[in-house]
Amino acid sequence: MSNDDPGNLLYAGFNQNDSLFVLGTENGYVLYNTEPFREIARRRVGGVGHVAMLHRSNILGLVGGGHRPLDSNNKVIIWDDAAQQPLAELEFRTPVLSAQFRIDRLVIATQDKVFVYDFPGNPIRLLKTYDTCDNPRGLLAVCPSSSNPVVAMPGRQTGHVHVVDVGSETGRAPQMLKAHEHGLACVALSYTGRLLATASDIGTRICVFDTATKQKLHEFRRGSFAANVLCIRFNHDASLLCASSEHTIHLFSLKNPERNRPSTLGLVGEYLPSFKAGRSMFKFNTKCPSLCAFGTDRQSVVAVCSNATFHQFAFDEQGPRPDRNKFSRLLKINEWDALFRIASDDDDGDSRDKGQGSAGGDEGSAGQQQDGVGSRPAAVAQSTLAAEGSGGTGIASDDETGEAVIVSAPSLRN
Image (cartoon, rainbow, N blue to C red; front, side):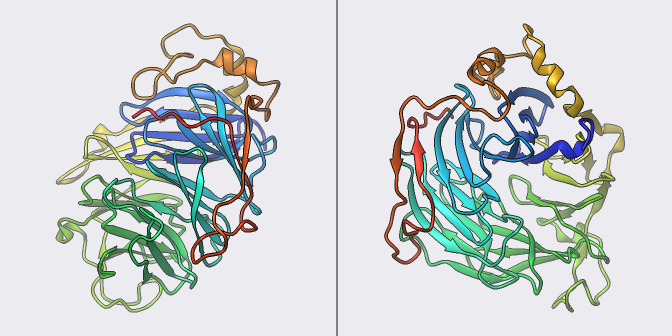
């Protein structure tokens, strides 16, 4: 692909409360504040195919990607953005498809397994391993709330969702939900973990379940034709839900379902529903694939699009408010190398804290630590850890995952 092709974007994702989002590219990663929109850090570390953020801290989980990757795609690099150096490495037998943090756990998905680690810690200890059905998208949803440590993942059977408690090595009994007849395309948990939203690879319905009772609470019709649902997101109080596909974002009301447009009872994508499936209150056109989230003002939906643009769509009780919409162009891929050749002295340059005006560390020192794209700072001190456990129920044995190389104990900033 040419350097100005948005296909050089390898990854986009939000943090736990949608206040930050990150882009992974062929050359590194770029961090943005969602609202007000602004770039807060850019790092050249090599190709990054996945980034896990830990709230607004300096701790990231990086997975290599692209033609000149940061590292092998079967490793998760626990990265200190402030120091611009690795803290730990977790290596697996197969490529890592996704990773998510909560304040006390790191959860990693491969093609057919999900690994749960105790985090932070030195050593980082493997707590549990779960088998899933074929999971090429690396589907995973981790509740960020400290009071409800649940994780949702594909079950062993197609269309099923496994909801597990990762708060302790014993935890509550896992819940298995039959969400769809077809394979899963997307799973999402509300901030408290009480609600679970799912979509199948048919993409015509969004289902919402109570994770404690397994009861289906809502069934929304996204459209009449098959679509690729890329993202589902709850707002903070779970009164609204948005879902994005390749061209549109649909907005649904959970608190006041009567606000959703009625849909004719009939065959909806997969099978005849047991009740009328409401259509979205309204939708926003992105004209390209996007990830969606809610703005902090509670009356907007934000979208990070595959054509390297950022949109903020406003709405109120009456409907969309296009007069309040905002648009920004994200970092142009063909500008990336030029940006790293420029020594910036202004406030938006090298000394930025995430959320506080500095990202901790500077471009110059990061550049001095690296000999070229794809190289990383040498570890000062290392200790090798075998995977914990010896084949007990739900615990990975030594041959199920690789070793973790610990460089230093993580130091977190709230």
